[in-house]
Length: 416
Image 1 (cartoon, helix red, strand yellow):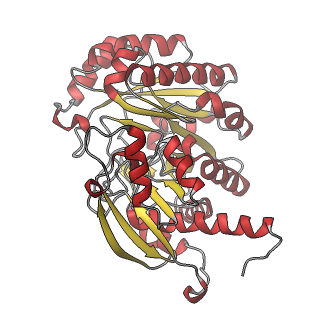
Image 2 (cartoon, rainbow, N blue to C red):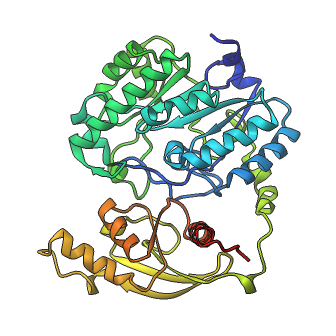
């Protein structure tokens, strides 16, 4: 075991009793739709992956790290584990790592990923000096994976079923092999889902160990309200213990299904201590009187979370705001704009685009590549996001302002 691993709570059983970790929620977007997952809940009393009470910018993450480091002297590990996919938010993830390593070169940094983009970013991960990667692998057979992962978005592709699962598994295995050759410690998380993949787990473990994964972490499936697998029976820790016995070898047995904003010792989370302090990390904003107001269409079922794909949304909520204050000005039912179930995909897409023609941007959980291109031709920005509508609207205005600033620079203008 490398010396650093003795200070990593996940990789060393004794370390979890001595050393603290913190997760920085800087990665809201995800590039997959998994049938066991729903990240829209943010109760501070709920402890599971994908849950966070706020999204931080890299600059805010740096300041939160400074606060935590000052109060928790045994902090040894900083990780990015969501609430979405860190590699699908690579700019934010990379900047966060760089900022914190600048403050503390000795801190251990780790990432938790679904592995879809590992081949794309493996070299950059290595250049940043990240030595610990957790990859969630729930199948090594595409037929099994197709039942678990409803949608895989890779580059300009939106893949479903066996096709999407095949790409995911191939990328996971290729990315892990590349990192293992470079000396990175790989931990594999596998969600044990009754009926779906529980019988398949020994084969997953066998293949991943052959590929160089040093530590296996079998975790129970917890049916989450709003997920496709909500109706499946919960996997108990007795089930997990029995599977660990079957698989043998080096396994993590002290996992507590940490949140995306966890702080402190595993099993003794202190996340709530730092919530109020981090609310003040937002940098000063220009006076509202000088801020441009934008019209933004949001795909949301209840108005609280960005939780629908644009091409599949049944309703659009239209907001106008300047990045600080937003007003809901319209609710547009999509059945007013589509031509019925028999309409072609192209016709429906055209009607969807017509529904937002008066908007500056679309804020959505996901959007097809062709739809994105057609919106862009009309000057409408597409922003993919997977958290609250409130934070998503602010993020969208930031992106719109950046686009405006870049346009001014090209014209030789300066921003106010």
